[in-house]
Image 1 (tube, rainbow, N blue to C red):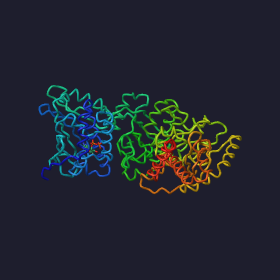
Image 2 (cartoon, rainbow, N blue to C red):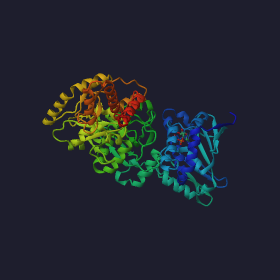
Image 3 (tube, protein in one colour):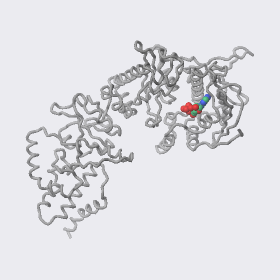
Length: 624
Ligand code: ADP
């Protein structure tokens, strides 16, 4: 293999640039990232060796070594982990595997957040953080039974890769330190960083130190604390924060730690966290499950899909089982009853912690819900067993909540008046659009609460919710609105009589409308479109369309407000002979208005503008 020079992918260049420039004040994290990578590589090798001892090549003294060469100005992080061959080096050190990277970088730029370390940190900068402190990075690595490789880059657009030699399996990452990073050549600053960032790494992180003059010894720098095995009360907040950042590769402290041990049916210890911020790629198809599985302190696997349902994918941490056999393959692990038990108890614990948080730490819970509510809601559809618990965790804005405040379903039910039978909701794209919706007019006069639902997932889970505490959920813009007041009922029937002919005439002029009715829901607006009780909402229709799917054509009902001057006017026009064209134009304009209010596109916008302009100039015509 001759030496090759390879260009970095565009997104790597962009990310490198961002990392170097905006994370500069956090540059010391390079050591955490490299030690974590080394630790992962050791985990992988150890796991593989459980079923294939050949890869050991006689070396199972798992460790990570930090060495420095003051003269050369370099630090090297070495491990005896899984190693890289040419293919994996090109794949992992020259590209960014995470999907959605491009979109994320564009989003950062658009939001003007390229200087926001937290945003970039949540991306997990990993290996590339080396370039904050080094102007050249050399990786020499060998996978068991493979050709060793040497990868090198100055981080400015390309890297080289060539054959090399390495006696043992593993990887050396050598950083040629920049002038302003030479401080890390100091033994005490390296010790400090390992203590601060990597104390929890399970494998020994060692360094050669001179205890007595002339006597060099390998010293273990980290405490290798499996903090999940400690008593809950013994773990400090500081320890939680650092452990979380190590395990989740996050920059920000977690919102909540959940530390518990299960006994009885299955024995395991768990230390999992709810992050404070949702990662940018939470909705990617290939998102990972954030809980790592250990068996008796030995790392078995990450992204363990059998440990947590997808809708709790934001939870990060560790589960350590003492029941599972150590030498299991991944396939077997995916299928044991034991895993089912662990999952069940973990889900219960996470949900009960959230419920407690909602009760006792309301502000914190709101912060959680704003970040992860959309994901949690998926559970209402997928986790039938826990549906009730999940419903209790949902929060919505409503006609009765202050700006940015939210209510739970039970809060809504508590406020319901006795005569109200159903829980009303309105779906749409934004709260501001919903707050001014004409569908709410009568609800407002009656001071009846309507929940606002603006997440795409809401319409999707509504059929699953169906009812809460025996109260059916009902769309404020669908079906008939029950009138419970006797005198109102009479007045309504009277108006239906008065407008009967107008309704029929409008119906004739508007073939796209299923029916024209006198509205009981409008007080200010002239008209609105109302869906059938079971038709997909306008918002859902938009989602279908965006996904390129056909939406079954559902004709809506046009409701008119009999008290509105426009309708009164229309009644007059209709009753006079010779106004055919005018009436047709008015009817069409009325329908278009209703479509616009519903947030729909007009079929014939040119015709609408023409008719509108005609109307707007009709006054001046009579004045002339
Ligand atoms: P991440 O660790 O988040 O996947 P990184 O950029 O830190 O991202 O690393 C990219 C990939 O490079 C890792 O997933 C791993 O496959 C590989 N890698 C990094 N460091 C090592 C190492 N010391 N030994 C083996 N593989 C490594």
